[in-house]
Length: 321
Picture 1 (cartoon, rainbow, N blue to C red):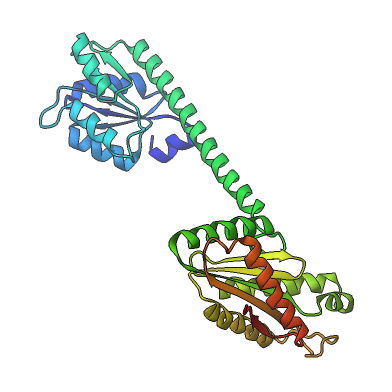
Picture 2 (picture 1 turned 135 degrees about the vertical axis):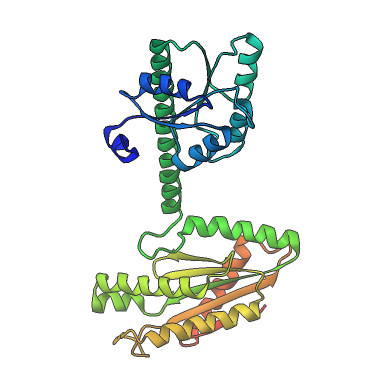
């Protein structure tokens, strides 16, 4: 049966590695009715076939020229791509010392010749069942890890805009302040507020308001992609950007670029003095010392944002003590 046909039938795939044709034939006759059987007549060929066909189980002779079974098993177990494929030694070498060495090389079982068909089939069935359960457990574990990562991401993400949520923002700002203080580096925070957003909602409806917030979130994500930069929805129509290793002056330029990019979208807002959706921004940045905690950054950036609002909106203010 072809490998594809065997897979469709749900058969386990067995690779026999033995330099003696008669031994291969004996095992083939025992296993062919229940399993998909492949074979190799040398250690090197066996390793190649394991890598190409990923069998479920390898039946491996020990006494072979050029490369014996112990060497083959060692190579397979040292390769991460083949290490998990179970190996069973099938050999006439039946003393305790040989069996111990085989198990130490990584084999899971040891069958001695002459071959007893019922024992071979029973052992192969058991090992395939164990491998199947192990593979299933590994798959479930990987799936669980992936799902947990997705849940963790969702727990740190704002559902509407896709940027970080307030929880992630708080954690990131605290962490970046500690890092900057430890290393004597700059850190800046930008606070952004969409101007007259309540009026926009009242005029165009909440669906349009959500679209507006999503647009702003997308602009923020595109504008701040450098490693370590965190864009977050701070609350309602207010957003925040954490900028590691960034001076207040540079952060101010980046905030102005963001303001202009929103203007370029020309999203209509008939109830705004500018006729379109605009944003006011406040920036706080400093060479961080122990005196500059989370409250300092938020309070100063908020104060700068308030000054932008008070000065007529649609502008950037950099906090200056």
